[in-house]
Amino acid sequence: MSDPTADPRVQSLINQLRPGAVRTVRVAGFDGADVLVQLVDVEGEKAEIARIPRQEASMRRMEHPSELFEVGQEINAEEIGRWREGQLHLSARACEIQALRSFLLAFEGGQVVAGTVSEVHNFGVFVHVDGEPDGSCTGFIRVPDLTWGWINHPSEAVEAGQRITAEVIIAETRTGQVTLSLKALQDDPLIRFADQVGRVLTGPIIKIVPFGVFVQLAPDVVGFLHLSELADESVETPGKLVDEGELITVEVTEVDLQRHRVRLSAAGGADRT
Image 1 (cartoon, rainbow, N blue to C red):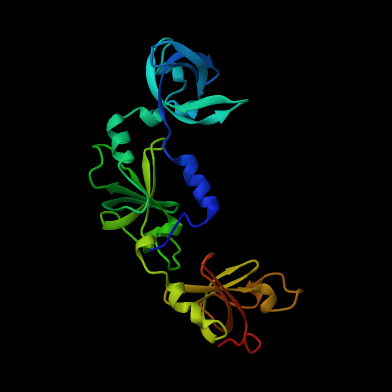
Image 2 (cartoon, helix red, strand yellow; image 1 turned 135 degrees about the horizontal axis):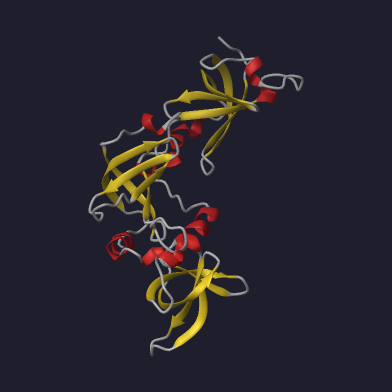
């Protein structure tokens, strides 16, 4: 399995998205589209003033939070951090649907879950996770987490109505979603390919970009050949030299397992057939 938290930048982001402590607050007023609230201590006394940003007020559509809240109303909200010279910010939407919150809090990173693909879009895939509250669609799979292989659209990996098994990356109470990964339950093909450094291989060009080309080297393994390996600096784009689908002979110069990339160099003057 892969470890999506291996990158410290990813871990930092996940830590920011983890559910925070729940506080009881009373609505004190509005500052533009934000909701100002007073924290209530265990004895029911009013304490510091905190803020609920507009986007954290509710999952429901609204023109202004005053449509949903009134001064003096007592609500629960989740701590999300301190900004504006230390002012506490909260999320009311994270506590809005208790059944949904309870469902999401039961997940842990690395847990394996099952579900049914609901919708497939160019930006990712929505999934009905087994056991989710009625009316919810809690699962989401980003495009990079669908497969190790090269795809042009998520529909090449899954389809609506398909049953899947996936690994939990993180459950977010503020968005009402659990981010999933299909790829995490698949073997990394680069592990088997790592011993190919120095080998000369021939494969089709599957994509051309302004600074180089991507070459299919093996099932689910794609390498990158920089423009400078194809021609001298006078050529501005590889599209003037090669076509998609064309076979090209390259040398594998690096297999980076951490960044999951393969670097190539031209072999025999970038022979093409």
